[in-house]
Image 1 (cartoon, rainbow, N blue to C red):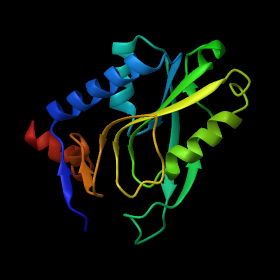
Image 2: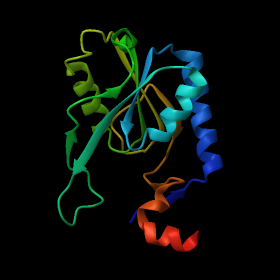
Image 3: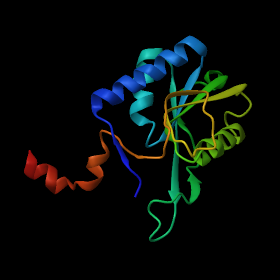
Length: 172
């Protein structure tokens, strides 16, 4: 098992703010597109700070039984979820929480550029993430933290995956 990088909520928001500064200084996107689930809290903060419309792409990786730590085939939802206008898709900033292998970001750019309802409005797609692991083959345009190794990143809300609603009820 890889080593773990445990991120507190305070550290997390600081890393997102660092990303916001990079974007603000170097790019003028017209819409933020988040890759779900990892980008959900990031895009929430960035959209509030940068005052931009948002859209979401839902992707799931199917690895098969006994392969939970390996990335499998990517399955895309049929539609983007967004209230952004077509014209907002001129300069897209595609956001994920991390670039682990680079596969998700690469395939998401390809999917986005071929997505029927907005493909004719997209003139540019740039990418952003909080962390880029050493072994990732993808080079994001904006990245807060470039790691020198490949740790398992334990994000502030990850512990909820281990809890049931019954556990939460008992605790509260």
